[in-house]
Image (tube, rainbow, N blue to C red; front, side, top):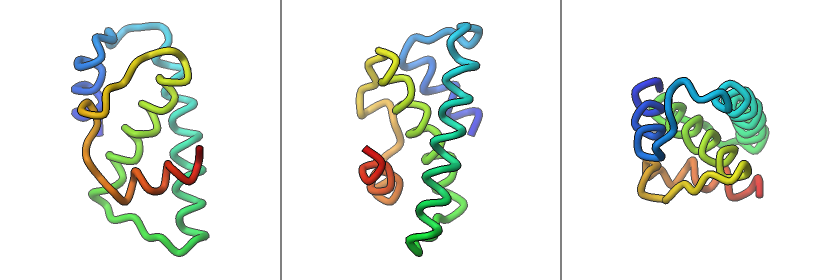
Amino acid sequence: MEAGQKLLLKELQVAPFDRRLAQWRKMALHLFEQTWANSARCGVRLEEKDVPDLYLHCLARVMETRGVVVPGAALPVNDAVTGLLKEKK
């Protein structure tokens, strides 16, 4: 998960020591936990390989709400994860 996060931040030109990251990560974790719980309630089971992708998509969603432009190509392609987050909008 850390490797994917490093790649995402590099792609977005966000420094690893950016002060905003702590808050973004906290918010992303909250969104991640909500999304995972909602998916379980709906009977959608995430595989282990989907977990890092879900977190990265949550982090990207939070960053977008804070004005960071996140191109789709910067995120892993994962239809299961994308579908879960579309329901959250």
